[in-house]
Image (cartoon, rainbow, N blue to C red):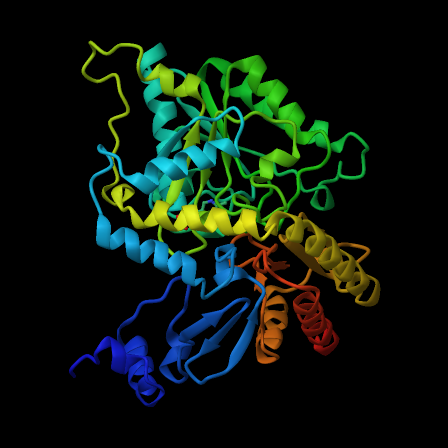
Length: 465
Ligand SMILES: Cc1ncc(COP(=O)(O)O)c(C=O)c1O
């Protein structure tokens, strides 16, 4: 069949053809396709502000910023589209061994928001940015001590990406299942979710949980540990804000044993939690920070690895050695559309005071979630920071037995039927795919939050347990 022109494809009368092409030829992410043999896939055709429209013309309030906490400044931003268009016409691409104008400008603006960090390395996805961080650790170990300090520590429940090596650093068992064998040299530490830890009620739980890191470093031999890679606030693992004292103790331990701190800001970066970066809520000085989703709010594919000048300088030390520099490239790290979109995205966040809005609306949403918890026994715990929130559902509040994941999925489906898209932990953690997730765009209003909360309230009321 002839493919429709771009203009015809946008016409409502042709939408069935588009849905047919999708159903017959696309292999969607994270989807079991069998049910789509008898029903149509959802095709999103339009977005404006907080709302998207599907192929049937049905409108939804998007409480998850494009499904996976990405479209931070909302849909339909003409100024970002124009910035990208202008840049593409002037200079679309050149390998990043050379520079480009928005790439240089965005690097300068970005490090301005990250005191202590000064170098920016571009890539295309969160996974890839994290892999760059892992490669730096491995190469540094090779250059400085015969490869000994090569191990990378990650935490149970954290996620760092979809490639085999980032899955090797992944603390979500169901994401890893059936994809091994994995890259050697990755070591797990326990999560720091007080609600799911027998020590969680202790006033110094945060320090105790962080000391799990020290135990692992000592057991493995500190001379073999290169870095620890952590999410500042765990996202897909259940929205886990580390307890008080956690990050500060992690910092002390890493300083003591000469372990680099790699913070994965792929979700929290660019304002989601009410500061530019999630780690900035805590007293910690990262050596590396990776970011992706909100960097250009999904208007272009871009990810970043930002590092300290000290780390960068390690790779200058032996210019006479032909192998002593970071021998890494990603073709599309040279796309100029990414930094052009990112520059405008950052300008919007500043000009519209969106960080303030995140703090205000995040507090409001948290209060409203607590009201829901008072009303519905099925909510066991409410967590989050800024516009990054989660509600963990339980079968029994006293025993904290998790709610069956099919029922949790049913709550999200009920909200969708009501016209509100919410998220949930999804095939990540055996038994613990039981957290509803909210991550509306940073522009959201009280009315939007009320609409989201009302839909969850109704859906929880409909739960047949
Ligand atoms: C914390 C975190 N790191 C890394 C990634 C991987 O990013 P990407 O899907 O862009 O490779 C994700 C994706 O959800 C994430 O949540």
